[in-house]
Length: 116
Image (tube, rainbow, N blue to C red):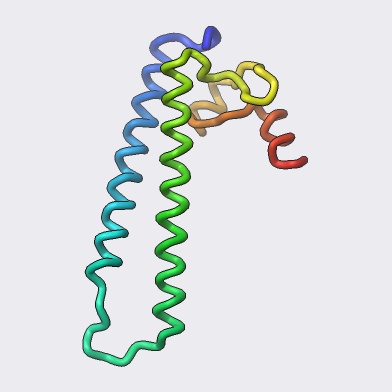
């Protein structure tokens, strides 16, 4: 984290905390909507209901995965290891962190992690 100032880390933390809160709200709303949704007195094709359910679940899973990544990044901040590539230990450039504050890898490490 030495390549990042306290101000930069604070701004990135705020960005992640705000995103985490937004995603948590979206997850909560999606679950509540699924629980409250009932066919409205009309015949509904079960295939459409199944597809709708699968898509809604996929959205929740995607959002939860992002929340998990954010929480892991906040943990790295607390431990003083934030901004370091988990693969090679290199500093993750501030420009990359501004775009993806929960980034775990530098560009080279990300390519390797993706099997490239």
